[in-house]
Picture 1 (tube, helix red, strand yellow):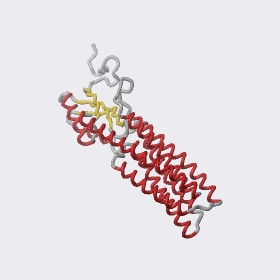
Picture 2: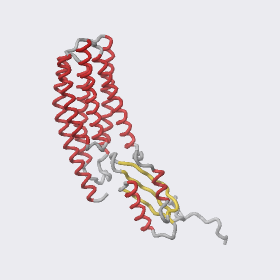
Picture 3: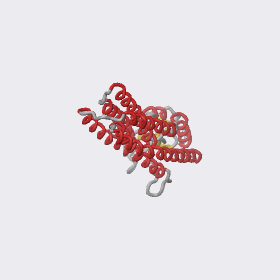
Picture 4: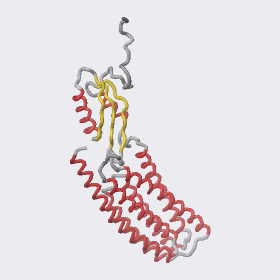
Length: 308
């Protein structure tokens, strides 16, 4: 990675952290208002949405800390740096969403059996306010949610946004038709949204932590492209992964014939990986055809050589 690219990445990370802090301040203030409104109106849908917003607050606080840690430079103990801190935060947020979802669905089942009275007017006002806050928060993060850390927070906010819509719909149904069951049904809808977003986030986080190839890159296609370069006979031990869910890294062994110079192949391969696949962080080992792949002991014995 070049110095300019590194500086651009650092500036983008810094801007994302500032936006996360701003959204955290918004959600903390409104979480308190929604908890109070849910208690006063006796609305499970509002309390469910407030519970989700509380996880948003924790998720945002965790994301802010993780974004700060991830910006620390590499050191002797962690030569790749601290980018994985953001992936760990995303995984923790995904697990937290699953737990909250379970609590919401459990309470909703109990309320479906005996729906209580709900102050629909106050419920609608609080839900409308939550909708506005979540719209603002989602808009603030929309252009800075490239990494899993920020994306995890954005999924929290989108889930809350849909939860506010569900609470508004439930308040309208209860006010217009007296359907008390609409409140727990809305909370089930919120829980379903949380399940969908959290499972994807957890799976994506595990994908990165398992050193899997980035979803937008095909290792077989890259190997085939490298074999097509002038002088390259074969490609083996190709590994493709990412640290923080954004920047891909690649290592590979290129077997080249004796008609080309190693540094020409290296220059050509590096340029090709950057221009075609967007892979900047590359480590390539150039090997002649008769190179001992095992790398231990003397070269393999040529069985076709005449005996002495």
